[in-house]
Each structure stands twice: as C-alpha cells, then as structure tokens.
Image (cartoon, rainbow, N blue to C red):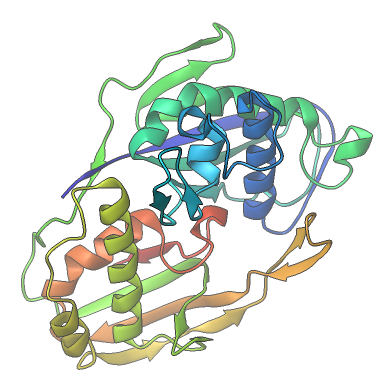
Length: 309
C-alpha cells in the first residue's frame, strides 16, 4: 500500500497591505479553487458534473470529487479530495507590504502531475489578492518560490518550474519500536469528528483510531491499491481498552465566511492535547498515517492536523 504524496511549500511576499482572517485555511482553499477553475475551465461552465472535459480538467479532478456520472454512463462515487492545505504559522491579522508568508499543499496521486497548473493558479491568486479588501486591491502577493522537501521546484527569478526528481510516498508501515505504552496526541488545528452522528466533545482513544482508519481506508481505496486488509473491528475493540492518562482537550471556536451561502459556517472542533496509556504498539502505524494526511472533517481547510509523540 502506497500513495504518491508530496508536500509543497509556497513561499510568498505581500506587495501591498493585507487584512487576513484569524485562520487562513478556508480563505486559501476558496481562492485556490477560484483561480484553478479560472485557469482550467475551457468551456467556462458553471457545473462540472456533466462536462465532457472533466477527466482532463485540473480543477474538476482536484475540487469536484462528489458523485457524478461519467461519460460512459457509469456513476462515480465521491472520493476524498487529493490535497491537504496547511497555512503557515503566524499568517493572520494585518500584514504590511514586503511581509513574507508561507502555506503548504500535500498533493496526493495524480494531483502531483498537476503542479504546473496549481503554481499558475497561485500566481493568479496573488494578482487578485486574498483576505478582507481584496476587491479594493488589498492582499496582493508574489509567489517567490516553491519547495518540495529540500528541493526548490520554482523560483520567481527564472520563471521555470522544476518538478521533483522523486515524489515521496505515504504508506502504512510497521512500527519501528515495540512496547509503546504511552503517547501524546496534539491537535494542531481544530479536529471535527462525528461519532453516533454528533460532533464529539472529547477524544477517547477508540474514537481517534476510528477516525484514522476511516481516513486511511478512504485514501487507499481512492488513490492506492484498494482498501487495506486490516482487522478493523479488532483494532477498534482493542482501542477501547486504552485509557486517557491526561487530557487537556478544549473546544476551539472557528468560523469561516461562505460566499456561496452568504453566512458564517462553523469550523469549530477539538484543540489541545491528550495522553493515552495502554498497549499502543500496534496502533502506531495507523496514528503515523493520520499524522501525515490530517483526519476528521474539512481536511482541505487544514483541519484535523495532529502530531503524535
């Protein structure tokens, strides 16, 4: 089981004043989607579900992943979006011209082949601006460079895109250590999980494991070699025997503005950290997988980012 998965960091610099929201993930996701559609859509259509070109369209393949009917009449089920967006640190509030900032995109599978279209879309984002006052010309920026790992893919000076020599892969690996009896899980961005059809306000270990398994299963089924052959029920049952030693979980309020719905949408979820105690060795590969791809709802906004120690 392995999926092509490369993280690209976009280094940018504001060319004029910018007024940014408290959390930039939803703003970046909306701006990237708009710019990619503007640069990719050959027919200038409003809907993608019945477009003959959707299989060759970068915007449709990356953003329009809901159920649709393919050209041969076959119904295609919804798949997880092939990217995870992550704003850089300290990217909020008012910024002056010349301020540098970053964000990253984890691209999965074929999305890596669409990097040139994505880079072009980010440059269009910079020309149009982001944040409050964009329509008045605020929030404009230049894309300075794109970095994949230690490799520079694009520099503004030469205007040439160099694709990575080797795209990394994400896979479910065996734990390199044994006898793990305690782990700390930190929630870097709000984690939105539903259990019994409601948002959880705490984080028992079996709920965390279920979320990681759902994410792993969905991604491998869509972009890997199919849903992995794991003892799902057994893993969840054994996860229920893991105790919480210390919890600093809190509810983190976060909202975004939806231009389409013309109202605020909640992105609130769990924040903080929790320490688990028990027989944890067999769960480490699953947790490490979730650590790389984010878990829960709205991962495209950068939500559900966890670190495991």
